Image 1 (cartoon, rainbow, N blue to C red):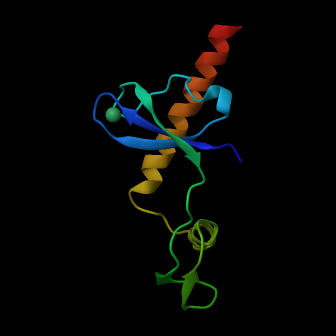
Image 2 (image 1 turned 180 degrees about the vertical axis):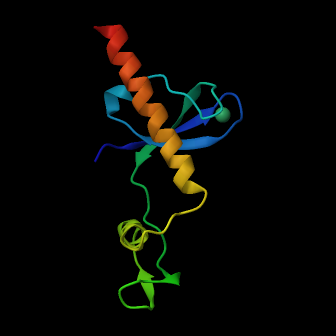
Length: 111
Ligand SMILES: [Zn+2]
């Protein structure tokens, strides 16, 4: 897994973290507000896992709430039950699409 770097938006000031290869850590990228982000100088670190919790929603297989112990559990629970995570769903989807679009543009202009 590549290390995580921290970035700060020059527009809205939002802080974000991104997985980057070391040699790509200063490649320009943009906030969802459209402004460029700058890398915050801190040591690369591994993202801590989420704290364990019990779901509010029941698992459709057992009809009971589930104990979630990791991000992976969390994602699988959501997917298995066809639940949607309000808020973050759209946020991450949007970010992902932006990144793909940027990558496509970048590869097109280079060749
Ligand atoms: Zn911003």
